[in-house]
Every structure is written in C-alpha cells, then in structure tokens.
Length: 277
Ligand SMILES: [Zn+2]
Picture 1: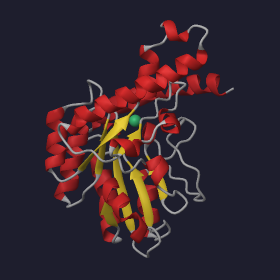
Picture 2 (picture 1 turned 120 degrees about the vertical axis):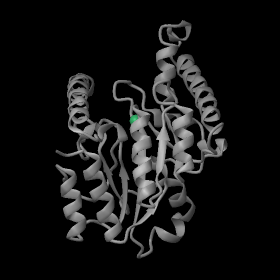
Picture 3 (picture 1 turned 60 degrees about the horizontal axis):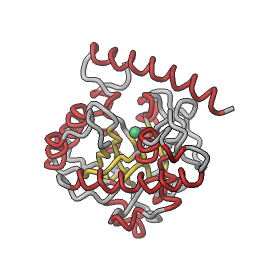
Picture 4 (picture 1 turned 120 degrees about the horizontal axis):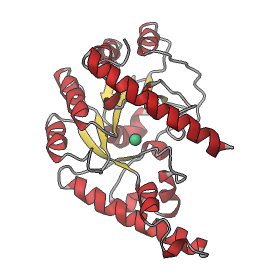
C-alpha cells in the first residue's frame, strides 16, 4: 500500500541517510545564490495544503520529530484555513506560505455580471484588479498568524484561468513576497517531484503543476523514489511537493482517499479531454 504515513517516513529517512539538507522554501530563496551551483545535496520540502488541514498537522508533527523543517502552503478557503492548525504547524518550526488561487476564485464570483457583456477587455481588467485585491486580503488573513514570505499557485484544473497569470500584470514582490516556486526555481538544476493527484508526476491529470526540465525519471511508486535515492541515481538537488491529504494513517483512511481521488481524477480527465482540444 503506497501513500501511507509509514512510506512517507521511509522517504524522509532515506533522504536523511543520503545527507540531503532539508530546506524550507523560504530558506532556499534566501540562500539560493550561494547554494544552487554548489556541491551541496539539498531537498526543498514543500506541501500544498488543498484540503484536510489535520493531515497537514500530522505530517508536520512527524517531520518535527525527525528534526525536519518544511513549508506548508495553505489555501485560504473555509475548509482549509484553520488558524489553530496553522499556528500549531508554525510552532513546530515549519514555514507557512500562501497557496493562492485568486484569478480562478474571482472569475467565478464576477461571472455573468455586467463586466462580462461585450466589453471583454474591460472584464479582464476588472478580473485582474479584483484578483489582486483578493490576493492581498487573503494574504493579510494568513499573516495574522504567520509572517508569510512565500507563495505557490493552486492549479485549479477545472478553471480556464491559470492563477500564475496574475503575475503577468502585477508583481508579488510588491506584497513583500520573496518567492514563488514556478518563477523562482531553476527546474533544470533542481529535480521536481510531486504527488499531485496521488500519482507521481502524472502530467495527464496534472494540468498545471508541472515543470519543463531535462530530467527523465518515471516514478510509479514512492518506493521507486526511495530506490533511486538508495542507488544514488537521483540528482543532489530536489524539490518535493507533497499534498498531505493523500497520505493515510490506516487502511480505512487509505480507501477513503482512494475513492475520492478516483472520482475526482475521472472528472478531471474528462474535463481536460474536452478542454484541451
Ligand atoms: Zn493546490
């Protein structure tokens, strides 16, 4: 059974054994120029918290027990934004970041309103303006509990808007944000591994959370990553993006997640099939 807390622990253990230095995303950004071309082995451990924040806390506790620091990017939506959990994760020594999705959220809110009619440019301008307002407001909410310095985009696969496009018009640095993985990491230098959709680097389902790079690794199971590390065939610089919602502590939980993913992935596949053409 893959995607269990036990397997996750084995993954962290082999990284430790192989002397990878664990960095939060903020630490990476701050040290970037001195370490990116060095001989240092490091792993930037990051979590996009889409839902089930209590799973994030569980993972944060495990990492803290192992003396590992990572980054938890939280969505600011009701089911995910739980201040008590966020505070506890921060107290364990982890970094908190903002998992933003403002263009897709705002596009739903102002759909069919007056801006939509005839004036397409006007609509787009308003959309971006409101999305930036939404970004600032939610960042402020999160900053009540942690001095957030980094952000990562939520893929919103069912929206036609790519949330990163907000930064074609605006600059997150004006909001005292120092880094966004898709803009501030050279993925030809750093191997990107993600469990999005509970499958490793599955680009068929994963519409936006992917990067262009020179690396050609296929991982069907977490154990393939562990084996690659054991055999020393993986690069010495890695970013791992783990969604805590997919990792189970027991069999019942495992199947619950399995069913949820199955239904959701089917919807996504059908949707992407009809929108990509
Ligand atoms: Zn996400």
